[in-house]
Length: 79
Image 1 (tube, helix red, strand yellow):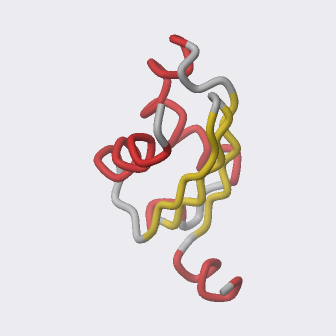
Image 2 (cartoon, helix red, strand yellow):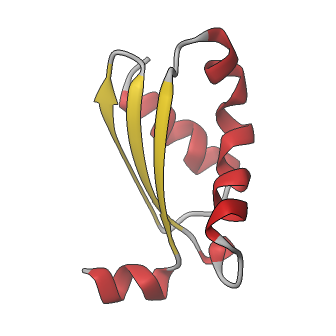
Image 3 (tube, one colour):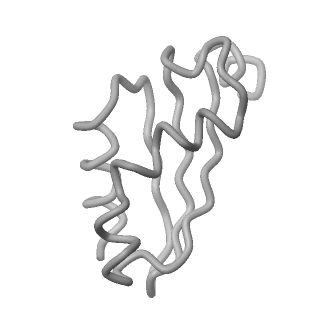
């Protein structure tokens, strides 16, 4: 699976400000910035993302996915 496909799935599945995905060979990392993460714990932020990719995780196309999730405010402070 190409990182661009994962990016597209995340962008279509939720309202995002920024999505960056890298990796290969079934191991990927995604950076996601979304207003939907405001006031939500990190665990629950990740629970918002995983269902979008669950079929690909079950099939083995995605073996490992590291998610870095940020609100727009957190991302602005980080950048």
